[in-house]
Length: 458
Image (tube, rainbow, N blue to C red; front, side, top):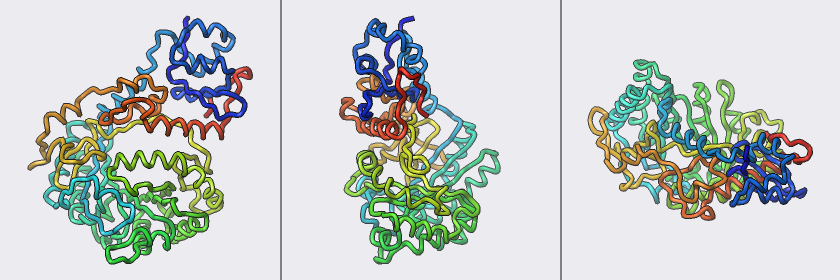
């Protein structure tokens, strides 16, 4: 059998012992001689050159570094991408309840990129609930996930309540589990203590910008007052009702004592008493961005270059704290160890995913929400009048071609976004992200040497 090097081999040169080859499909890592590294990662492959390494071929094949000369290595990621794009097992809906907010965060990027639709009315909320029920009856998904987003979603409290009540009624009628979560700044929760919004949902995602002094300097109310204490009161209320909480703590200006102060304040709310929370450490890099996609690219650059060192300094302060078991760090395992790079792709632009604006405009993706991106509009009875061109895009059996089709990181990015064109591999920010993740992971999990019988790194 003729064997050729895998398209998914990546050369990593940070190991002082020599070149390491990592396969993004199998997650195998191997320290190899330079001549073998050049053959495994070269672009012009000749299977005959591999005969010089015949002794290592069984090991290389087992770890995915060489494959049959006729193998189509992109068949699996292509199948997985299309399965996500056209699968019906899960219905996901993101609702932009409003573009208004009661806070004036210094780094907010939303005002610059989203269309300025009015705050959602109760009537539009009812139409959306009927649309979701109609989609559920057609798709018959195993589960439905609805996220209430903004602006600050709770500014549209009446519409939020209508959506939540109608979806719970639908859940009882159809017997399909519905999870409802709200992304919120948390400052309005206590004012809605008697609302279905805080009684019938599954959980909330709330962001803190560090301890009180740091947070209140960044996340001010329009009166100029800080919001920290009101948010903590809201978290306490939600904890008393057993709702799941995801708390994101920004690390930009956070030191170890500041982290402990936030965790102590969270512990005082009773978080974790009835539900296992998720406490997530990551930076914000939204300042100066004029779009969500620009913010994401900025996040990629800053997270790769800065967060690792910053968070490594914070991890020792977590040890022994009661909330330590629930703290997650971007790109890291528990205890600060880098995560093994894993496959993933954007799943927004799918047949079973909807993003709906506060005036009933329907989008393929929450990252593209200008007037030109409107795919349809919800009318009476929850029906949608579709834009024919945008509907064709949704039904398009799209797959990456051009530079991406030969990218060794394709198994990790999963083809990325069909709306974004990558002019060249060098211009793709995800390549740098994935390569740096691999380097960080291998520093923590050194590759075995080929002559010693390597095994996959897990």
